[in-house]
Length: 399
Image (cartoon, rainbow, N blue to C red):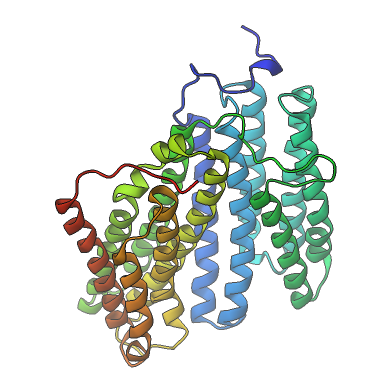
């Protein structure tokens, strides 16, 4: 049967699992995360940009890429990803995201204009294409809302990409990111049209949950890539081997903490929510924080594998401790979104990291990594003990 605009929305019969094309798109974001990670490793080790400036730049590039992925995921959880129109948009996203990822290493330098122009062309172009190819369906007003907000951020992206001053570029791109994320979070409120989040009519909960879970696995896979690359380039000394084993164990703990109960029940939570579109939006922000934490944790792995017993610069704790802290913060937010409460183990883990910072400043990099792993082990262990004393919990989203 010929696909028509009326059939763009998912139906009850539409398969909810991710399509192979969507999984293919994820491969681009694997590459993008490796480029961001490589930037950060260089910032922590060679000091050319400075750690804090490098962190800020990498964050802006990461947020731009995450916005592209998030809008794509929400769209394919609302629309049928098997229709030619939606598949074309996914392919457009793949090409654009790959171009942005290639520009990341010099995203604040010689390739800033390429990154910005590609981002703007992708974000606006796919909305326009979908609106035209779909003859304005299924919701022409939503296209107007999204284009209105992208129009607000476009000047900041383009001018920021063209100026030669890095400080000015950072300020303009910060305004662009804030504009884009304000629109995402609020549902693109537009004069006379109001606000409406993507998928408010119907969200394929199982599909959306699976996509978030898959991106967490992508980030963990990128961390494993960093571990393998760092260790394969080492001399395989005992201390470096210890760092390798410790990093792998820490990655397993991150996986365990994420998927323990809440991370594995996202679909049920969305189904039970009184406001699934809002919950989907909030879950995106919680996962964004967790993904950033995993990437930063992977940078910490590289640092303590490469120089396990050397001097520990204070800034290295931003990666070795800060990465797990970001991950636990995002995971705590996700637990609240699924169950309406936060486990004491998450809060205790965050408190432990805060209290251990002064002592960690006097440790070796490998020892600091071991301390971080022990805290994560404590959180995972508390989860396991709680599971043995409780019946299986039912998601009770707060909204």
